[in-house]
Image (cartoon, rainbow, N blue to C red):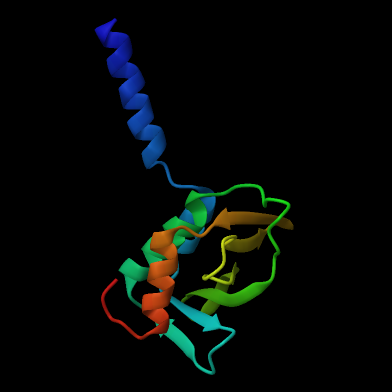
Length: 132
C-alpha cells in the first residue's frame, strides 16, 4: 500500500512539472514585446525570468472559453528568437472578470485563463518596473 501511495505521489509530482507545448515553445524566446491597446508605447523586455514566467502562465491554464466571456483583445505579446517573430499572443482586458490569453497554433485557437499573477506581471511590465 505504501509503495502504491509513493508511486502515485511521484506520478503526480512529475505530471505537475511537465510543461505544456505552448510553454516550451514560448520559453525559447529571447525577447518579447508587449503592446497594450491603451498605451502609445510598446514594452520590450529581454529579461529571461519575465519571459519564462509569462510563457508558463500562458501555457498553464488552458481551458474552454465560457459563453459569457467576450473575446475582445486588449493587447498583444510578441515572442522573438534571434530577432524573428516566433509566436504572438493576444490578451483580453486585465481589469475584467473574464481575462484570457488567446493564441493560435497550427490553425487551432487556444484560450488560457489570465490568473492574478499573470495580470500583475503584465501590469508591472506596463508600468516599467524592473522586478517581477
